[in-house]
Length: 504
Image (cartoon, rainbow, N blue to C red; front, side):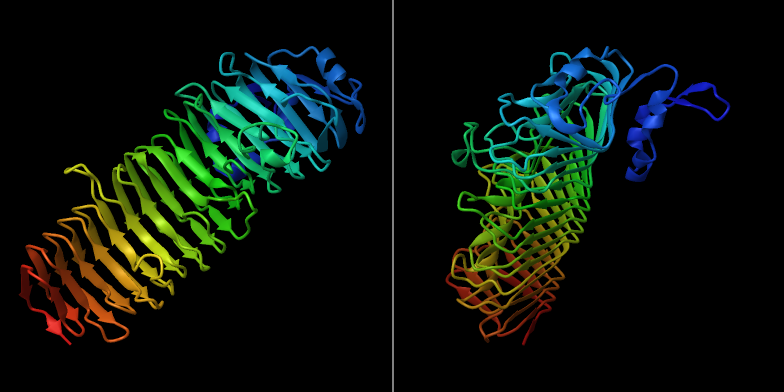
């Protein structure tokens, strides 16, 4: 991007520097920078576009001589579009608006409004800002922006008003196709969501997705402070293998399948809020966050609230090599059985650090599935907690640890629900528990594994049952320097080493 300096000389300003900056830096740029001597700047109304929404602006856009460095500016008004605007293989292009709304024509049967670059012919140095799109009429909705660029993408302050109920593609797709390319989308708003295809004239599978990052994404993309949901087929869906997506802030609500579906090495979520507090008849699995694959997927300082759960808060899928959930809070309410955090059997190493789960519904607050691999990576839980009033009607234990060699260090569990609610069941061999407090209505700790080590723990049943139960066949179990209320129930033939404990 070129900008004019105070003395009138042109100087180069790297958009890459802008994209690496914080959100506030992005907002300081204005369309005035695009009007420097090396750019062609067009006010579309001066070129003949109708700002009242009565006549299509596509013929006007087609007549503008667009070249590298062109900016199309939309003044306040409504602009009718009845065809796609397509621009590919460019080096510098901008769409900029001031209180401008694009209205798709009721009889337009296409799939896109602005198609800016393709996977085969990506652009470079693209900026889109300030446009709103009107889906308030019945049977409206399509892909309003599809942007696929090699490098330097900046999108900000775009909004969709009204529900997408046409059964066509969802409104936004963004890809950085070069592995060294970068881009950012900020304040993209699709809060009204979309309708399931079976209730629309369209025929795409399931229904539209709010924001897609496709398998063609291979660079790095920031997604900042966006508002998404409820969508039938994921809210934000990142389906890349080689690219990276970083979600910063934003509100994601009530989408089906997943509200944030993330993949790609070093992809992460920071300071986001995900809420499930409403569902439709076809919303059968509204997961908050789904980690699909890659190494070092990171969820940090994120709040998840499931008020009407029919899916899990966080699912770590089999293709994830390493994931971390850190300094986050999960609240699950209601009476529908579910899981808060679920680690699949094929997933690699998972760290849960400084994270609190309040679980007030039946099911498991933490479920670590067993692995058929003898050298499966462990799960490490540090300075975290599970609390709440979930009962034992659909799974007696709030935490189920089936994988071996996991470590639970200062991991406190308190469960006050009925139906013989217990704290944790240990099934995987070789797990370690350190400096933790365990309280549950029924027996807080049940061990059905070999080589388990308990050190410095406290365990107490709220209804006077034993503080720990060790099941028949458990071998080489150690219990040291711990306080166990009402003793240990050894159920059958077990081998336990006791030292320095208090049986209260």
